[in-house]
Image (cartoon, rainbow, N blue to C red; front, side):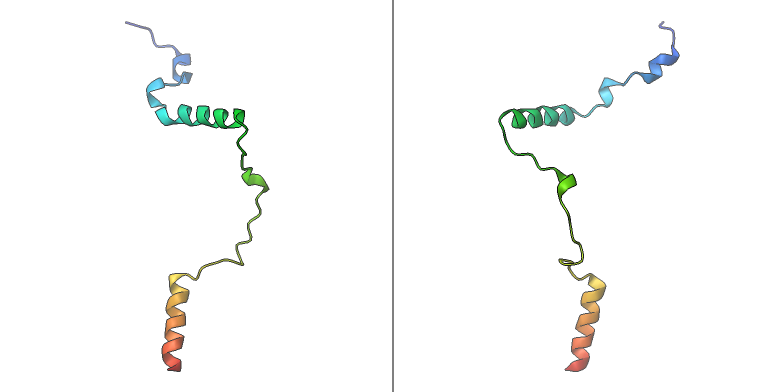
Length: 70
């Protein structure tokens, strides 16, 4: 029987890895080799205040206000 060594805990278990993960990274490298544009999400600025959709609570409050007016 094999002796247990403390460094064995540090080795990654290959059965724990997701199969799709390595495939996605290889697809990504193929795309960059073909010259396809890459999106750098760090450069994108989002302004959340302009395009916010009303929440359910806000929609309900608007409906109630409209009912009172009629």
